[in-house]
Image 1 (cartoon, rainbow, N blue to C red):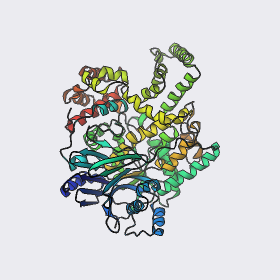
Image 2: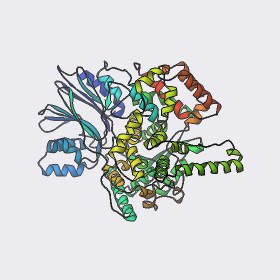
Image 3: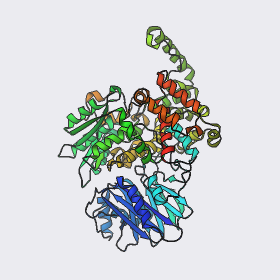
Image 4: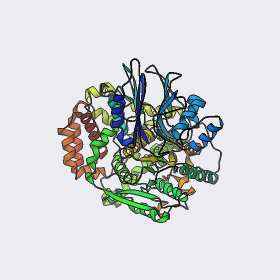
Length: 631
Protein backbone atom coordinates (compact mmCIF):
# COMPACT_ATOMS: atom_id res chain seq x y z
CA UNK A 1 0.00 0.00 0.00
CA UNK A 2 1.24 3.46 -0.75
CA UNK A 3 0.74 7.19 -0.87
CA UNK A 4 0.39 8.96 -4.21
CA UNK A 5 0.36 12.62 -5.24
CA UNK A 6 0.90 14.77 -8.31
CA UNK A 7 -0.17 17.62 -10.53
CA UNK A 8 -0.99 18.69 -14.08
CA UNK A 9 -0.33 22.39 -14.53
CA UNK A 10 -1.82 24.62 -17.23
CA UNK A 11 1.48 26.34 -18.01
CA UNK A 12 5.13 26.27 -17.10
CA UNK A 13 7.08 23.47 -15.48
CA UNK A 14 6.20 21.54 -12.36
CA UNK A 15 8.34 21.54 -9.24
CA UNK A 16 9.97 18.33 -8.00
CA UNK A 17 10.35 20.01 -4.61
CA UNK A 18 6.55 20.09 -4.31
CA UNK A 19 6.43 16.37 -5.09
CA UNK A 20 9.05 15.70 -2.42
CA UNK A 21 7.08 17.70 0.16
CA UNK A 22 3.92 15.75 -0.62
CA UNK A 23 5.75 12.44 -0.53
CA UNK A 24 7.22 13.26 2.86
CA UNK A 25 3.79 14.24 4.18
CA UNK A 26 2.52 10.82 3.02
CA UNK A 27 5.55 9.00 4.48
CA UNK A 28 3.37 6.95 6.85
CA UNK A 29 1.56 5.43 3.84
CA UNK A 30 4.82 4.30 2.30
CA UNK A 31 7.97 4.48 4.46
CA UNK A 32 10.04 2.03 2.38
CA UNK A 33 10.85 4.07 -0.73
CA UNK A 34 10.19 7.43 -2.39
CA UNK A 35 9.92 8.11 -6.12
CA UNK A 36 9.28 11.13 -8.35
CA UNK A 37 8.63 11.79 -12.02
CA UNK A 38 8.22 15.08 -13.86
CA UNK A 39 7.37 15.63 -17.51
CA UNK A 40 7.05 19.35 -18.03
CA UNK A 41 3.70 20.36 -16.56
CA UNK A 42 3.01 16.88 -15.15
CA UNK A 43 4.43 15.49 -11.94
CA UNK A 44 3.90 12.18 -10.08
CA UNK A 45 5.08 11.24 -6.57
CA UNK A 46 5.04 7.91 -4.77
CA UNK A 47 5.66 6.76 -1.18
CA UNK A 48 5.98 2.99 -1.18
CA UNK A 49 5.00 0.30 1.27
CA UNK A 50 6.71 -2.73 -0.28
CA UNK A 51 4.47 -5.80 -0.31
CA UNK A 52 4.46 -7.29 -3.83
CA UNK A 53 7.72 -7.56 -5.82
CA UNK A 54 9.74 -5.91 -3.06
CA UNK A 55 12.96 -5.74 -5.09
CA UNK A 56 11.81 -4.30 -8.44
CA UNK A 57 8.41 -2.67 -7.89
CA UNK A 58 9.59 0.94 -7.54
CA UNK A 59 7.31 3.79 -8.64
CA UNK A 60 6.43 5.94 -10.49
CA UNK A 61 6.66 3.16 -13.07
CA UNK A 62 6.73 3.33 -16.88
CA UNK A 63 6.03 1.08 -19.85
CA UNK A 64 8.74 -0.02 -22.29
CA UNK A 65 9.09 3.27 -24.21
CA UNK A 66 8.22 5.49 -21.22
CA UNK A 67 5.16 6.91 -22.94
CA UNK A 68 2.95 5.80 -20.03
CA UNK A 69 3.76 6.47 -16.36
CA UNK A 70 1.80 5.56 -13.24
CA UNK A 71 1.73 6.24 -9.51
CA UNK A 72 -0.43 3.58 -7.94
CA UNK A 73 -1.86 2.73 -4.52
CA UNK A 74 -3.49 -0.65 -3.94
CA UNK A 75 -3.53 -4.28 -4.93
CA UNK A 76 -4.97 -5.99 -8.01
CA UNK A 77 -5.47 -9.49 -6.68
CA UNK A 78 -6.02 -11.15 -10.06
CA UNK A 79 -2.86 -9.69 -11.57
CA UNK A 80 -1.14 -13.09 -12.12
CA UNK A 81 -3.95 -14.17 -14.50
CA UNK A 82 -4.04 -10.76 -16.17
CA UNK A 83 -0.28 -10.86 -16.62
CA UNK A 84 -0.47 -14.18 -18.47
CA UNK A 85 -3.16 -12.82 -20.80
CA UNK A 86 -1.09 -9.73 -21.54
CA UNK A 87 2.07 -11.77 -22.18
CA UNK A 88 0.18 -13.77 -24.80
CA UNK A 89 -0.82 -10.48 -26.44
CA UNK A 90 2.83 -9.49 -26.76
CA UNK A 91 3.38 -7.21 -23.79
CA UNK A 92 6.81 -7.27 -22.16
CA UNK A 93 7.27 -7.12 -18.38
CA UNK A 94 10.30 -5.86 -16.46
CA UNK A 95 8.93 -6.56 -12.96
CA UNK A 96 6.68 -9.01 -11.13
CA UNK A 97 4.45 -6.29 -9.67
CA UNK A 98 0.72 -5.76 -10.10
CA UNK A 99 1.50 -2.10 -10.86
CA UNK A 100 3.12 -2.96 -14.19
CA UNK A 101 0.11 -5.14 -15.01
CA UNK A 102 -2.11 -2.05 -14.72
CA UNK A 103 0.12 -0.14 -17.16
CA UNK A 104 -0.14 -2.88 -19.80
CA UNK A 105 -3.87 -3.28 -19.19
CA UNK A 106 -4.26 0.40 -20.01
CA UNK A 107 -2.13 0.03 -23.15
CA UNK A 108 -4.36 -2.84 -24.27
CA UNK A 109 -7.82 -1.61 -23.25
CA UNK A 110 -7.60 2.10 -22.43
CA UNK A 111 -9.95 3.22 -19.67
CA UNK A 112 -11.81 -0.09 -20.01
CA UNK A 113 -8.86 -1.66 -18.20
CA UNK A 114 -10.80 -1.01 -14.99
CA UNK A 115 -13.32 -3.70 -15.91
CA UNK A 116 -10.62 -6.38 -15.64
CA UNK A 117 -9.16 -5.32 -12.28
CA UNK A 118 -10.26 -7.20 -9.17
CA UNK A 119 -8.99 -5.40 -6.13
CA UNK A 120 -8.61 -2.10 -4.31
CA UNK A 121 -6.81 0.82 -5.89
CA UNK A 122 -6.40 4.51 -6.54
CA UNK A 123 -3.98 5.61 -9.24
CA UNK A 124 -2.97 8.36 -11.63
CA UNK A 125 -1.63 7.37 -15.06
CA UNK A 126 0.09 9.85 -17.39
CA UNK A 127 -0.38 9.05 -21.09
CA UNK A 128 2.24 11.21 -22.80
CA UNK A 129 1.07 10.43 -26.35
CA UNK A 130 -2.53 11.43 -25.62
CA UNK A 131 -1.56 14.25 -23.30
CA UNK A 132 -3.95 13.09 -20.60
CA UNK A 133 -3.92 12.13 -16.95
CA UNK A 134 -6.16 9.16 -16.17
CA UNK A 135 -7.15 8.81 -12.51
CA UNK A 136 -9.33 6.07 -11.05
CA UNK A 137 -10.65 4.71 -7.77
CA UNK A 138 -11.71 1.12 -7.03
CA UNK A 139 -15.33 0.00 -7.19
CA UNK A 140 -16.14 0.05 -3.47
CA UNK A 141 -13.93 2.99 -2.52
CA UNK A 142 -11.40 1.13 -0.37
CA UNK A 143 -8.59 3.48 -1.41
CA UNK A 144 -9.00 7.28 -1.31
CA UNK A 145 -8.24 9.86 -4.01
CA UNK A 146 -8.45 13.59 -3.23
CA UNK A 147 -8.13 16.41 -5.77
CA UNK A 148 -8.51 20.12 -6.40
CA UNK A 149 -8.66 22.46 -9.39
CA UNK A 150 -6.69 25.65 -8.85
CA UNK A 151 -6.09 28.64 -11.16
CA UNK A 152 -2.69 27.22 -12.09
CA UNK A 153 -3.81 23.63 -12.59
CA UNK A 154 -4.92 20.28 -11.16
CA UNK A 155 -3.55 18.57 -8.02
CA UNK A 156 -4.26 15.15 -6.48
CA UNK A 157 -3.15 13.07 -3.49
CA UNK A 158 -4.09 10.12 -1.30
CA UNK A 159 -4.88 12.44 1.59
CA UNK A 160 -5.88 16.08 2.04
CA UNK A 161 -2.62 16.89 3.83
CA UNK A 162 -0.77 15.75 0.71
CA UNK A 163 -2.63 18.35 -1.34
CA UNK A 164 -1.64 21.16 1.01
CA UNK A 165 1.99 20.02 0.74
CA UNK A 166 1.80 20.16 -3.05
CA UNK A 167 0.35 23.66 -3.01
CA UNK A 168 0.30 25.64 0.22
CA UNK A 169 -1.93 28.32 -1.33
CA UNK A 170 -4.97 26.01 -1.58
CA UNK A 171 -7.84 27.69 0.25
CA UNK A 172 -8.84 26.32 3.65
CA UNK A 173 -12.29 27.91 3.51
CA UNK A 174 -14.94 25.72 5.10
CA UNK A 175 -17.65 23.97 3.09
CA UNK A 176 -20.72 24.64 5.26
CA UNK A 177 -22.91 22.31 3.24
CA UNK A 178 -20.45 19.48 3.88
CA UNK A 179 -20.48 20.29 7.60
CA UNK A 180 -24.27 19.97 7.56
CA UNK A 181 -23.85 16.42 6.20
CA UNK A 182 -21.25 15.77 8.89
CA UNK A 183 -23.70 16.71 11.65
CA UNK A 184 -26.19 14.22 10.22
CA UNK A 185 -24.03 11.25 9.25
CA UNK A 186 -20.70 11.74 11.15
CA UNK A 187 -18.89 11.73 7.78
CA UNK A 188 -18.80 13.89 4.65
CA UNK A 189 -19.87 12.04 1.48
CA UNK A 190 -17.95 12.31 -1.77
CA UNK A 191 -17.40 14.31 -3.84
CA UNK A 192 -17.51 16.86 -1.01
CA UNK A 193 -14.86 17.43 1.66
CA UNK A 194 -14.80 19.84 4.56
CA UNK A 195 -13.15 22.39 2.26
CA UNK A 196 -14.96 24.21 -0.55
CA UNK A 197 -11.95 23.93 -2.88
CA UNK A 198 -11.15 20.22 -2.36
CA UNK A 199 -13.07 17.17 -3.61
CA UNK A 200 -12.99 13.37 -3.37
CA UNK A 201 -13.27 11.16 -6.43
CA UNK A 202 -16.30 8.92 -5.67
CA UNK A 203 -15.93 5.12 -5.55
CA UNK A 204 -16.22 3.35 -8.90
CA UNK A 205 -15.33 6.50 -10.87
CA UNK A 206 -12.52 7.59 -13.14
CA UNK A 207 -11.42 11.03 -14.27
CA UNK A 208 -9.68 12.44 -17.33
CA UNK A 209 -7.54 15.59 -16.98
CA UNK A 210 -6.05 17.50 -19.91
CA UNK A 211 -4.05 20.72 -19.88
CA UNK A 212 -4.57 21.06 -16.16
CA UNK A 213 -8.37 20.90 -16.42
CA UNK A 214 -10.84 18.14 -15.55
CA UNK A 215 -12.47 17.05 -18.82
CA UNK A 216 -14.80 14.40 -17.46
CA UNK A 217 -15.67 12.30 -14.42
CA UNK A 218 -17.27 8.94 -15.25
CA UNK A 219 -18.94 6.23 -13.14
CA UNK A 220 -17.56 2.96 -14.53
CA UNK A 221 -19.21 0.58 -12.02
CA UNK A 222 -22.22 0.41 -9.76
CA UNK A 223 -23.88 -2.34 -7.79
CA UNK A 224 -25.82 -4.44 -10.34
CA UNK A 225 -29.22 -3.82 -8.83
CA UNK A 226 -31.02 -5.17 -11.89
CA UNK A 227 -29.48 -8.61 -11.48
CA UNK A 228 -31.62 -11.14 -9.58
CA UNK A 229 -30.44 -14.67 -8.87
CA UNK A 230 -33.21 -17.27 -9.10
CA UNK A 231 -31.48 -19.57 -6.71
CA UNK A 232 -32.59 -21.69 -3.79
CA UNK A 233 -31.36 -20.88 -0.31
CA UNK A 234 -29.09 -23.89 0.13
CA UNK A 235 -27.60 -23.53 -3.32
CA UNK A 236 -26.94 -19.88 -2.45
CA UNK A 237 -25.10 -21.05 0.66
CA UNK A 238 -22.86 -23.30 -1.43
CA UNK A 239 -22.11 -20.48 -3.91
CA UNK A 240 -21.37 -18.06 -1.09
CA UNK A 241 -18.93 -20.46 0.53
CA UNK A 242 -17.03 -20.92 -2.75
CA UNK A 243 -16.84 -17.19 -3.56
CA UNK A 244 -15.79 -16.23 -0.03
CA UNK A 245 -13.01 -18.81 0.05
CA UNK A 246 -11.66 -17.59 -3.29
CA UNK A 247 -11.92 -13.94 -2.21
CA UNK A 248 -9.91 -14.77 0.90
CA UNK A 249 -7.29 -16.83 -0.93
CA UNK A 250 -6.43 -14.15 -3.48
CA UNK A 251 -6.08 -11.59 -0.67
CA UNK A 252 -3.37 -13.70 0.92
CA UNK A 253 -0.99 -13.09 -2.00
CA UNK A 254 1.95 -11.27 -0.47
CA UNK A 255 5.74 -11.27 -0.46
CA UNK A 256 5.76 -10.27 3.23
CA UNK A 257 4.12 -11.86 6.32
CA UNK A 258 0.37 -11.46 6.71
CA UNK A 259 -2.03 -11.54 9.68
CA UNK A 260 -5.59 -10.59 10.64
CA UNK A 261 -7.68 -8.35 12.85
CA UNK A 262 -9.89 -10.51 15.07
CA UNK A 263 -12.60 -8.45 16.75
CA UNK A 264 -14.62 -11.41 18.00
CA UNK A 265 -17.51 -10.67 15.65
CA UNK A 266 -18.78 -12.97 12.93
CA UNK A 267 -17.11 -11.27 9.94
CA UNK A 268 -13.55 -11.17 11.25
CA UNK A 269 -13.98 -14.68 12.70
CA UNK A 270 -15.00 -16.07 9.30
CA UNK A 271 -12.05 -14.29 7.69
CA UNK A 272 -9.61 -15.91 10.13
CA UNK A 273 -11.27 -19.30 9.64
CA UNK A 274 -10.95 -19.02 5.85
CA UNK A 275 -7.33 -17.89 6.10
CA UNK A 276 -6.52 -20.93 8.23
CA UNK A 277 -7.59 -23.26 5.42
CA UNK A 278 -4.89 -21.75 3.17
CA UNK A 279 -2.01 -21.43 5.63
CA UNK A 280 0.36 -24.06 6.95
CA UNK A 281 1.52 -21.68 9.67
CA UNK A 282 -0.57 -20.25 12.52
CA UNK A 283 -2.26 -16.99 11.50
CA UNK A 284 -1.13 -14.01 13.57
CA UNK A 285 -4.29 -12.39 14.99
CA UNK A 286 -4.72 -9.08 16.83
CA UNK A 287 -7.57 -8.05 19.12
CA UNK A 288 -8.47 -4.93 21.09
CA UNK A 289 -10.54 -4.91 24.27
CA UNK A 290 -11.85 -2.48 26.88
CA UNK A 291 -12.18 -2.52 30.67
CA UNK A 292 -15.92 -1.93 30.19
CA UNK A 293 -17.20 -5.48 29.66
CA UNK A 294 -20.23 -4.33 27.65
CA UNK A 295 -17.80 -3.26 24.90
CA UNK A 296 -15.32 -6.07 25.31
CA UNK A 297 -15.38 -8.90 22.74
CA UNK A 298 -12.02 -10.39 23.71
CA UNK A 299 -13.57 -13.61 25.12
CA UNK A 300 -15.18 -14.30 21.72
CA UNK A 301 -11.95 -13.49 19.89
CA UNK A 302 -10.13 -16.01 22.10
CA UNK A 303 -12.67 -18.71 21.20
CA UNK A 304 -11.84 -18.26 17.52
CA UNK A 305 -8.10 -18.01 18.18
CA UNK A 306 -8.18 -21.28 20.15
CA UNK A 307 -10.39 -23.02 17.59
CA UNK A 308 -8.01 -22.22 14.71
CA UNK A 309 -4.73 -22.26 16.62
CA UNK A 310 -3.76 -18.69 15.76
CA UNK A 311 -0.77 -16.81 17.14
CA UNK A 312 -3.06 -14.52 19.13
CA UNK A 313 -2.23 -11.07 20.52
CA UNK A 314 -4.44 -8.83 22.72
CA UNK A 315 -4.34 -5.36 24.26
CA UNK A 316 -6.70 -3.23 26.40
CA UNK A 317 -7.55 0.32 25.30
CA UNK A 318 -8.09 2.80 28.16
CA UNK A 319 -9.63 6.31 28.25
CA UNK A 320 -6.28 8.05 27.69
CA UNK A 321 -6.40 6.53 24.21
CA UNK A 322 -8.06 9.81 23.28
CA UNK A 323 -4.57 11.35 23.34
CA UNK A 324 -4.28 10.17 19.73
CA UNK A 325 -7.28 12.30 18.70
CA UNK A 326 -5.38 15.35 17.33
CA UNK A 327 -3.24 13.11 15.12
CA UNK A 328 -6.34 11.28 13.91
CA UNK A 329 -8.10 14.53 13.05
CA UNK A 330 -5.10 15.78 11.09
CA UNK A 331 -4.75 12.48 9.26
CA UNK A 332 -8.40 12.37 8.24
CA UNK A 333 -7.99 15.92 6.97
CA UNK A 334 -11.68 16.68 7.47
CA UNK A 335 -14.28 16.03 10.18
CA UNK A 336 -15.05 12.31 10.69
CA UNK A 337 -16.75 11.44 13.97
CA UNK A 338 -16.87 7.65 13.99
CA UNK A 339 -15.49 7.00 17.48
CA UNK A 340 -14.46 3.47 16.47
CA UNK A 341 -11.50 5.19 14.80
CA UNK A 342 -9.87 5.04 18.25
CA UNK A 343 -9.79 1.22 18.56
CA UNK A 344 -9.16 0.92 14.81
CA UNK A 345 -6.04 3.04 15.17
CA UNK A 346 -4.79 1.08 18.17
CA UNK A 347 -5.35 -2.37 16.69
CA UNK A 348 -3.57 -1.13 13.53
CA UNK A 349 -0.69 0.17 15.61
CA UNK A 350 -0.59 -3.13 17.51
CA UNK A 351 -0.46 -5.27 14.37
CA UNK A 352 1.77 -2.82 12.52
CA UNK A 353 4.62 -3.50 14.93
CA UNK A 354 4.93 -6.99 13.42
CA UNK A 355 3.31 -6.89 9.97
CA UNK A 356 2.68 -4.91 6.81
CA UNK A 357 -0.55 -6.69 5.78
CA UNK A 358 -3.70 -7.79 7.63
CA UNK A 359 -7.05 -9.16 6.54
CA UNK A 360 -10.22 -7.78 8.12
CA UNK A 361 -13.96 -8.44 8.16
CA UNK A 362 -14.99 -5.01 6.88
CA UNK A 363 -18.05 -4.95 4.61
CA UNK A 364 -19.93 -7.94 5.97
CA UNK A 365 -22.57 -5.91 7.81
CA UNK A 366 -23.54 -3.84 4.79
CA UNK A 367 -23.81 -6.75 2.34
CA UNK A 368 -25.42 -9.27 4.68
CA UNK A 369 -27.67 -7.16 6.90
CA UNK A 370 -25.76 -6.84 10.13
CA UNK A 371 -27.34 -3.68 11.49
CA UNK A 372 -30.50 -3.46 13.60
CA UNK A 373 -31.59 -0.29 11.75
CA UNK A 374 -32.34 -2.43 8.69
CA UNK A 375 -35.03 -4.27 10.63
CA UNK A 376 -36.48 -1.12 12.21
CA UNK A 377 -36.83 0.64 8.84
CA UNK A 378 -38.15 -2.42 7.00
CA UNK A 379 -40.65 -3.21 9.75
CA UNK A 380 -42.06 0.34 9.59
CA UNK A 381 -42.34 0.05 5.80
CA UNK A 382 -44.25 -3.22 6.09
CA UNK A 383 -46.58 -1.78 8.73
CA UNK A 384 -47.29 1.20 6.49
CA UNK A 385 -47.92 -1.06 3.50
CA UNK A 386 -50.57 -2.98 5.46
CA UNK A 387 -52.02 0.16 7.11
CA UNK A 388 -51.01 -1.17 10.51
CA UNK A 389 -48.84 1.56 12.03
CA UNK A 390 -51.68 2.76 14.29
CA UNK A 391 -52.29 -0.79 15.54
CA UNK A 392 -48.56 -1.30 16.19
CA UNK A 393 -48.37 1.96 18.19
CA UNK A 394 -51.35 0.80 20.28
CA UNK A 395 -49.63 -2.54 20.98
CA UNK A 396 -46.38 -0.78 21.92
CA UNK A 397 -48.20 1.49 24.36
CA UNK A 398 -50.02 -1.48 25.89
CA UNK A 399 -46.77 -3.40 26.37
CA UNK A 400 -45.12 -0.39 28.01
CA UNK A 401 -48.06 0.07 30.38
CA UNK A 402 -47.74 -3.58 31.47
CA UNK A 403 -44.00 -3.17 31.94
CA UNK A 404 -44.58 -0.11 34.13
CA UNK A 405 -47.02 -2.13 36.21
CA UNK A 406 -44.74 -5.13 36.83
CA UNK A 407 -41.21 -3.69 36.53
CA UNK A 408 -40.16 -0.89 38.89
CA UNK A 409 -37.23 0.07 36.66
CA UNK A 410 -39.63 0.77 33.78
CA UNK A 411 -42.09 2.96 35.71
CA UNK A 412 -40.99 6.19 34.01
CA UNK A 413 -41.03 4.76 30.49
CA UNK A 414 -43.50 6.39 28.12
CA UNK A 415 -44.03 5.93 24.40
CA UNK A 416 -41.88 6.55 22.36
CA UNK A 417 -38.96 4.88 24.13
CA UNK A 418 -36.60 4.31 21.19
CA UNK A 419 -35.76 5.41 17.68
CA UNK A 420 -37.77 2.41 16.48
CA UNK A 421 -40.82 4.00 18.08
CA UNK A 422 -39.98 7.52 16.95
CA UNK A 423 -39.76 6.67 13.24
CA UNK A 424 -43.36 5.45 13.21
CA UNK A 425 -44.50 9.07 12.94
CA UNK A 426 -42.31 9.71 9.88
CA UNK A 427 -42.82 8.89 6.21
CA UNK A 428 -40.82 6.75 3.79
CA UNK A 429 -37.11 7.51 3.54
CA UNK A 430 -37.33 10.01 6.40
CA UNK A 431 -37.45 7.00 8.73
CA UNK A 432 -34.09 5.60 7.65
CA UNK A 433 -32.59 9.08 7.57
CA UNK A 434 -33.71 9.56 11.20
CA UNK A 435 -32.17 6.22 12.23
CA UNK A 436 -28.85 7.28 10.74
CA UNK A 437 -28.84 10.86 12.01
CA UNK A 438 -26.58 11.97 14.86
CA UNK A 439 -28.38 15.32 14.77
CA UNK A 440 -31.90 15.12 13.34
CA UNK A 441 -33.20 17.90 11.11
CA UNK A 442 -35.25 19.29 14.01
CA UNK A 443 -32.23 19.22 16.31
CA UNK A 444 -30.07 20.97 13.74
CA UNK A 445 -32.74 23.66 13.44
CA UNK A 446 -32.42 24.26 17.20
CA UNK A 447 -28.63 23.93 17.40
CA UNK A 448 -27.48 25.86 14.33
CA UNK A 449 -26.79 29.56 14.39
CA UNK A 450 -28.90 31.76 12.11
CA UNK A 451 -26.00 32.01 9.64
CA UNK A 452 -25.58 28.22 9.49
CA UNK A 453 -29.32 27.67 8.91
CA UNK A 454 -29.34 30.18 6.05
CA UNK A 455 -26.35 28.57 4.36
CA UNK A 456 -27.39 24.93 4.59
CA UNK A 457 -31.15 25.11 3.98
CA UNK A 458 -33.62 22.28 4.72
CA UNK A 459 -33.73 18.58 3.77
CA UNK A 460 -30.44 18.36 1.84
CA UNK A 461 -29.23 15.25 3.64
CA UNK A 462 -32.52 13.40 3.05
CA UNK A 463 -32.28 14.17 -0.67
CA UNK A 464 -28.76 12.70 -0.65
CA UNK A 465 -30.20 9.33 0.40
CA UNK A 466 -33.18 9.66 -1.93
CA UNK A 467 -31.02 9.59 -5.06
CA UNK A 468 -29.88 6.08 -4.15
CA UNK A 469 -33.44 4.88 -3.58
CA UNK A 470 -34.46 6.29 -6.96
CA UNK A 471 -31.54 4.51 -8.60
CA UNK A 472 -32.53 1.21 -7.00
CA UNK A 473 -36.22 0.61 -7.59
CA UNK A 474 -37.21 -2.63 -5.89
CA UNK A 475 -40.01 -4.18 -3.87
CA UNK A 476 -37.36 -5.92 -1.73
CA UNK A 477 -37.32 -3.55 1.23
CA UNK A 478 -34.26 -5.06 2.93
CA UNK A 479 -32.15 -4.89 -0.23
CA UNK A 480 -33.10 -1.23 -0.64
CA UNK A 481 -31.54 -0.37 2.72
CA UNK A 482 -28.53 -2.63 2.18
CA UNK A 483 -27.90 -0.76 -1.08
CA UNK A 484 -28.06 2.64 0.61
CA UNK A 485 -25.46 1.58 3.19
CA UNK A 486 -23.18 0.04 0.58
CA UNK A 487 -23.16 3.31 -1.36
CA UNK A 488 -22.89 5.67 1.60
CA UNK A 489 -21.89 4.49 5.06
CA UNK A 490 -19.54 1.72 3.90
CA UNK A 491 -17.20 3.75 1.63
CA UNK A 492 -17.59 7.17 3.24
CA UNK A 493 -17.22 6.08 6.87
CA UNK A 494 -16.01 2.50 7.37
CA UNK A 495 -13.50 2.25 4.53
CA UNK A 496 -12.26 5.83 4.92
CA UNK A 497 -11.70 5.19 8.65
CA UNK A 498 -9.88 1.88 8.14
CA UNK A 499 -7.66 3.24 5.36
CA UNK A 500 -6.52 6.27 7.37
CA UNK A 501 -6.06 4.42 10.68
CA UNK A 502 -4.18 1.50 9.15
CA UNK A 503 -2.00 3.65 6.90
CA UNK A 504 -1.08 5.91 9.83
CA UNK A 505 0.71 2.76 11.01
CA UNK A 506 2.09 1.75 7.57
CA UNK A 507 -0.25 -1.23 7.51
CA UNK A 508 -2.23 -2.51 4.52
CA UNK A 509 -5.71 -3.87 5.28
CA UNK A 510 -7.61 -6.20 2.94
CA UNK A 511 -11.09 -7.64 3.31
CA UNK A 512 -12.63 -10.55 1.38
CA UNK A 513 -16.09 -9.08 2.10
CA UNK A 514 -15.13 -6.14 -0.14
CA UNK A 515 -14.51 -8.35 -3.16
CA UNK A 516 -16.78 -6.95 -5.86
CA UNK A 517 -17.74 -10.41 -7.14
CA UNK A 518 -18.81 -11.43 -3.63
CA UNK A 519 -20.78 -8.19 -3.23
CA UNK A 520 -22.46 -8.58 -6.64
CA UNK A 521 -23.57 -12.06 -5.60
CA UNK A 522 -24.88 -10.80 -2.26
CA UNK A 523 -26.83 -8.00 -3.97
CA UNK A 524 -28.50 -10.51 -6.31
CA UNK A 525 -30.00 -12.51 -3.41
CA UNK A 526 -33.41 -11.85 -1.83
CA UNK A 527 -33.19 -9.66 1.24
CA UNK A 528 -34.76 -12.28 3.49
CA UNK A 529 -31.83 -14.60 2.76
CA UNK A 530 -29.70 -12.07 4.62
CA UNK A 531 -31.95 -10.62 7.34
CA UNK A 532 -35.32 -11.46 8.88
CA UNK A 533 -38.00 -9.07 10.11
CA UNK A 534 -37.65 -10.81 13.47
CA UNK A 535 -34.27 -9.08 13.75
CA UNK A 536 -31.85 -11.90 12.86
CA UNK A 537 -29.03 -10.54 10.74
CA UNK A 538 -26.44 -12.27 8.55
CA UNK A 539 -28.70 -15.28 8.27
CA UNK A 540 -27.01 -16.76 5.20
CA UNK A 541 -23.53 -16.17 6.63
CA UNK A 542 -24.38 -18.03 9.82
CA UNK A 543 -25.96 -20.94 7.94
CA UNK A 544 -23.25 -21.18 5.28
CA UNK A 545 -20.41 -21.26 7.79
CA UNK A 546 -22.16 -22.89 10.75
CA UNK A 547 -19.38 -25.47 10.92
CA UNK A 548 -16.76 -22.71 11.24
CA UNK A 549 -18.26 -20.90 14.23
CA UNK A 550 -18.71 -21.94 17.87
CA UNK A 551 -22.31 -22.52 18.94
CA UNK A 552 -22.13 -19.43 21.17
CA UNK A 553 -21.82 -17.23 18.07
CA UNK A 554 -25.11 -18.27 16.49
CA UNK A 555 -27.62 -16.18 18.45
CA UNK A 556 -25.50 -13.61 20.29
CA UNK A 557 -26.34 -9.93 19.87
CA UNK A 558 -24.17 -7.74 17.68
CA UNK A 559 -21.79 -5.58 19.73
CA UNK A 560 -19.96 -3.67 17.02
CA UNK A 561 -16.33 -2.54 17.03
CA UNK A 562 -16.69 0.60 19.13
CA UNK A 563 -15.27 2.32 22.19
CA UNK A 564 -17.13 3.11 25.46
CA UNK A 565 -17.12 6.81 24.55
CA UNK A 566 -20.26 7.66 26.53
CA UNK A 567 -18.67 6.50 29.77
CA UNK A 568 -15.32 8.10 28.97
CA UNK A 569 -16.94 11.47 28.24
CA UNK A 570 -19.01 11.35 31.45
CA UNK A 571 -16.20 10.26 33.76
CA UNK A 572 -12.49 10.35 32.88
CA UNK A 573 -12.71 12.90 30.06
CA UNK A 574 -15.58 15.18 31.06
CA UNK A 575 -13.48 18.16 32.16
CA UNK A 576 -11.33 17.82 29.06
CA UNK A 577 -14.50 17.78 26.93
CA UNK A 578 -15.96 20.86 28.62
CA UNK A 579 -12.72 22.78 28.21
CA UNK A 580 -12.44 21.90 24.53
CA UNK A 581 -16.04 22.70 23.61
CA UNK A 582 -16.47 25.88 25.64
CA UNK A 583 -13.05 27.45 26.16
CA UNK A 584 -10.91 26.49 23.17
CA UNK A 585 -13.37 26.63 20.32
CA UNK A 586 -14.89 28.77 17.59
CA UNK A 587 -17.86 26.43 17.25
CA UNK A 588 -20.12 29.35 18.23
CA UNK A 589 -20.11 30.47 14.59
CA UNK A 590 -21.82 27.19 13.64
CA UNK A 591 -23.64 25.97 16.76
CA UNK A 592 -25.26 27.98 19.56
CA UNK A 593 -23.08 27.97 22.69
CA UNK A 594 -26.09 27.60 24.99
CA UNK A 595 -27.04 24.36 23.21
CA UNK A 596 -23.53 22.95 23.77
CA UNK A 597 -23.80 23.87 27.46
CA UNK A 598 -27.14 22.06 27.68
CA UNK A 599 -25.69 18.89 26.15
CA UNK A 600 -22.75 18.98 28.56
CA UNK A 601 -24.98 19.50 31.60
CA UNK A 602 -27.38 16.68 30.74
CA UNK A 603 -24.61 14.26 29.79
CA UNK A 604 -22.40 15.05 32.78
CA UNK A 605 -25.27 14.64 35.25
CA UNK A 606 -26.33 11.33 33.74
CA UNK A 607 -29.79 12.69 32.96
CA UNK A 608 -29.35 11.77 29.31
CA UNK A 609 -26.53 10.42 27.15
CA UNK A 610 -25.38 12.81 24.44
CA UNK A 611 -22.10 11.03 23.71
CA UNK A 612 -22.56 10.86 19.94
CA UNK A 613 -23.48 14.53 19.65
CA UNK A 614 -20.68 15.65 21.96
CA UNK A 615 -18.14 13.51 20.13
CA UNK A 616 -19.28 15.04 16.83
CA UNK A 617 -18.78 18.54 18.25
CA UNK A 618 -15.40 17.59 19.71
CA UNK A 619 -14.12 16.33 16.36
CA UNK A 620 -15.32 19.47 14.57
CA UNK A 621 -13.75 21.65 17.25
CA UNK A 622 -10.35 19.94 16.83
CA UNK A 623 -10.50 20.15 13.04
CA UNK A 624 -11.35 23.86 12.96
CA UNK A 625 -8.48 24.70 15.30
CA UNK A 626 -5.77 22.28 14.17
CA UNK A 627 -6.25 22.93 10.46
CA UNK A 628 -6.74 26.71 10.69
CA UNK A 629 -10.00 26.41 8.79
CA UNK A 630 -11.37 29.67 7.40
CA UNK A 631 -14.98 30.30 8.44
